[in-house]
Image 1 (spheres, rainbow, N blue to C red):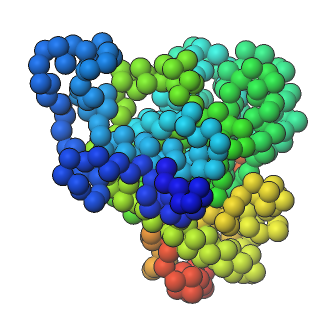
Image 2 (image 1 turned 90 degrees about the vertical axis):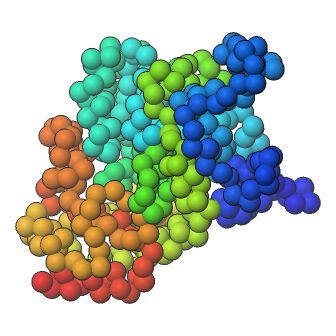
Length: 408
């Protein structure tokens, strides 16, 4: 990490320079794409030492095990998630081919046949994995409202074999915020670990590791990549935790590592992360205020609004604003929301988020259609819910588009 006069760089500068390695043999200004499946050895001994992890072995063997471009991305995201931590060198990043590859590999390697406590409002595929797939792997998951720390404590006492608590820093799609600091303390008191999906917030807004979380996950497809051009994921945790849980071994054998091209594109996205998040956040605040005052909006959820259930907590743990995602419900429920989404012109009707353009979608029939009905009801994912991922266009234009669509 670069320091100037014994002063570390700001987050904004770190995002531009994170993970840089000036040792490229050709002096390349940007990290090259090492688009290769395998690496050559100078002789048999070097190859043998590489496979035996002995000194003098080749630094790279095969891109499923590790790739220089991918490792650059891993260093960069680790630097941002551990920004400001005094023991940042104890942590390491691990890149994957998708957010779900990162999440599932992290869960499988850490929980290992024990109990999991999960937030009830989660991304659809995460929820489905925890509900339907973990039992087949010898694990059981209970779903609770993790914004209520009392419920978390009661669930830990109910399941003393809990190995992992899993939640999202900003829940998808309800935008619920949990007290990461308090939950981390509870988890550690009961011998469990806390894993936080930080996709919605990014380290620009929330740094779960600084709040006591043990492992952070991201879908880099979203804000990290930022342009809707890649699929990827990452974990950041202490190196000792990776070794203890054998997470690297699971990634190696499950084959989930990121490809060099996606890693390189994500690195390009990271350089403008702080800049984009400033605009996403600024726009979202203006759009949220507009929707909150609109007569057709029945209810709205955005952490920056005083009406948000965890507004005080959001102010405590979030930096630089409140993110770029808004969830709301129109008077008239599903049909009104359907009409809105069918009449937008600037906003794009598409799943995902974190791209430079504004995306709008209907969670109940799209991203969360695979979630267990009881869990959806418990989490408050109603049929009329609309999720708006605000882009970096002009806020006035986004509002004008929503206004004309609401009139239609």
